[in-house]
Length: 282
Image 1 (cartoon, one colour):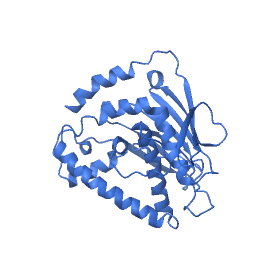
Image 2 (cartoon, one colour; image 1 turned 90 degrees about the vertical axis):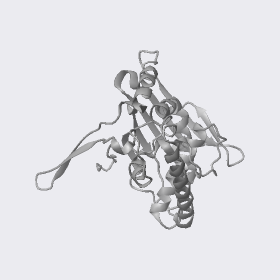
Image 3 (tube, helix red, strand yellow; image 1 turned 120 degrees about the horizontal axis):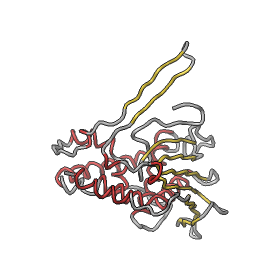
Image 4 (cartoon, helix red, strand yellow; image 1 turned 120 degrees about the vertical axis):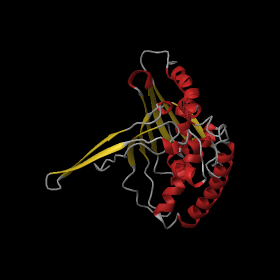
């Protein structure tokens, strides 16, 4: 049912691009005069840029869109993260809207009872995570990274929901942005919450990988292919360069500051593929 509703919409949206060649769009964010508000500007980064990005929607011609995001190490990690999320939403808003319509707009309409239980669980989880982040981010790299991704999600959500951008905002409520990033969790949660509906995401297998060690453990070859539902075909190849630190008190920048991945509009992880790093690791 969901696939039948979404497919015509997707075809119309993808076919709507009017130009022969895609155009690269640039945007950047700066902290406003109050010290808390965030402002987004068109163009390449200017003085005081906290985060910036470039975006090219080439889906009509190559099947892919391309997003490159960077942030400024002279700002606190959580300011970088929030700004990066907001700029990404600014640049990819159109694809985010289309991806939400294709994948999630009807998800809860078709199963309101399940989504009510799901949202109750998610709210508890968000509050628990937020408490742990603030308790441990100054000493524990894991919770610091969780906090930064939640700040990135907060910036993404605030801009997408047309909220006032404020770097002190935290992600504590379930919004559309969370559904973009929930696919992997839904596979487990659907079973726990006893979902019994035909369009369950856990019934849609995706991806396989081939891994081969060559020589005398000299190298490793990695191959990958992805298959998923047709309505998920809006894809973005993303590159993030975020010079974040091990903890909120650390002066040492993490080694995996740059990652490249195939992803989707509004999704801050890959879901379907491994990540690649400049250190030649995946």
